[in-house]
Structure formats: C-alpha cells, structure tokens
Length: 19
Image (cartoon, rainbow, N blue to C red):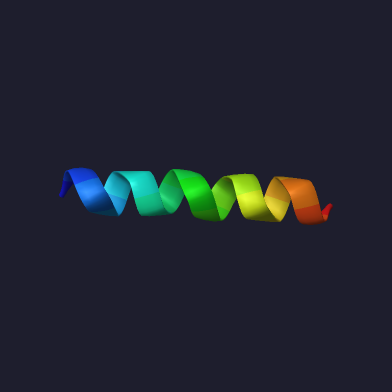
C-alpha cells in the first residue's frame, strides 16, 4: 500500500512536470 502511494505521487509529479 505504501509503495502504491509513492507510485501515485510520482505519477502526479510526472503529469505536473509534463504540463
């Protein structure tokens, strides 16, 4: 579960950086 949370945060960061 903790790993999933980290992955989600990374995903959001990636999208934010992309925009």
